[in-house]
Image (cartoon, rainbow, N blue to C red; front, side, top):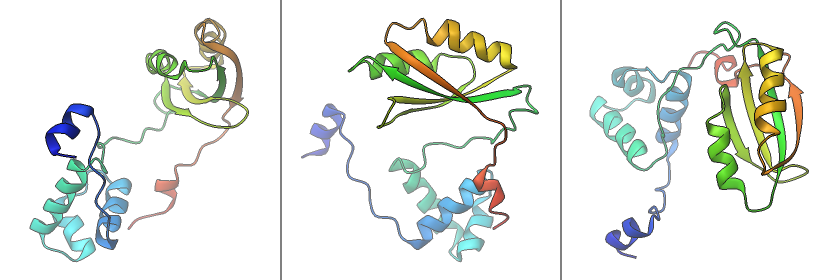
Length: 165
C-alpha cells in the first residue's frame, strides 16, 4: 500500500524491529524520562548523534508515545485508589472509553477479556469521593451493566523498584 493510501486510511506502517540498543534506550527512558542524550549514549555505548537519531526514530515510529512523571498519588492528595471492573453493553466500548477518560482521577483504562469488559484504575481524594465516583458517575452510565470495586491498599512501581541503571 502506498504512503498516501495508508495516511488516508488511518493505517500505520508496520513497526520496525527493535535491536538490543533500542531496548536498552527504552529501559533507560522508562526509568528516567528526563535522562539526557549524553547519559543515554554513554549508557548504551553509542555516539550522542546515534542516540538522538534512535530516540527520534522510536518517537516517530510510535514506540515512545510520550514522557511523563510518575506521581505518588497519596502524597499528591489522592488517598484512595481502586481498580474498578465494569461489565458494559456489547459494542459500547468507544463511547464508554470517552466517558471514562473524563472521570476525575481515572489514570488507566483497558478493554479486557474474561469475566468483565473494562478495567479502570482511579485515584480519589478519599473513600467518600471514590464512593461518589462509583455510585453516581459510573453506575449512572447507561452502557455500564455492573461494576466491582477493588480497593488498593499498597502499590509498588516496578520501574522504580528495579533500581538505578
